[in-house]
Amino acid sequence: MIIRRLSGRIGMLQLIFFVPMIVIVMVMVLVNSIGTNEYGMARDERIVVSTTTSLYDTGLWEVIEDKFEDKYGVQLDVISGGTGKALELGRRGDVDLVTVHDVDREEEFVNSGYGLKRHEFAYNSFLIVGPESDPALIENLSAEDAFRRIALMGKDGEVVFVSRGDESGTHSREKDIWRGLGYDNFYEADWYVEAGAGMGTTLMLAEEKGAYTVSDIGTFVAFEDQLDLVRLVDKGDNLRNIYTAIAVNPNIDPEINGYGSRILIEFLLSEAIQSTIKEYRITGSLDQLFLPIETYEND
Image (cartoon, rainbow, N blue to C red; front, side, top):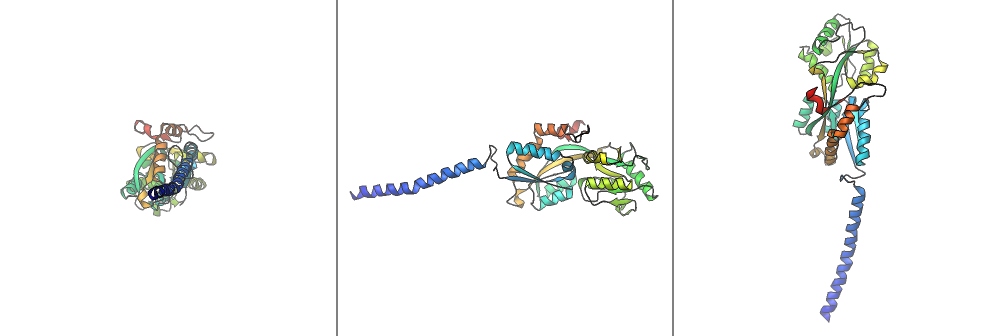
């Protein structure tokens, strides 16, 4: 009798303890299912991206952002700046993903442990633009010959060159060309002006001074209606401009969204978004601003 009463009491204690636990677990499962989507991403989750201005100012990132948020139901925050700024935000762990266009600094970023891997997803070209009168006579020259003539006539006070001067990918490419020609102190020349600003501002300053400058084709097309500057040089391997996505190493900061970055990279490389990149145009322009990376080797 005593044993029966004790076993009955234990049964009741078990019910009192385990029933609430079962209810709690069921509630947690329900909440979790409501709070995540079919891709396993929390609905209040967000992915922070630092990107170069040329992808942002042309409006391409806005299109990609809308498509991504519609598909995954996850907020995508995009911070625009030059490549130097984008990589610095990555080094500090302030963003989850960087999209930039400077191969040397990208490889340094990865090799130093700040980024996981380079993923090329689009490309276009740089241009050398200048006044329609083209006082340095650079039209259709190679980039190297064009720079030589600008430097030669700049010394005579006949032309001015405006640089972004902001450690962006465009600025890095321009500096590479100058240094490749042996102009190590080009930035000290009187004819060389540093804007210290983004591409749009640099183009407007070149317009004001009737000067030459280097621009990515996308931003130039976006500002073309506001400019009298024209395209003068647009061919050559050293004017190729490749855009790369790099996930920031989650070991830098536990709050970095590594899973979200991986999903976003897969999205950028997907057939649908590669098609979006290929077809993207600025309203009123027929110029193709970006090309999908799959066509790079055949171009």
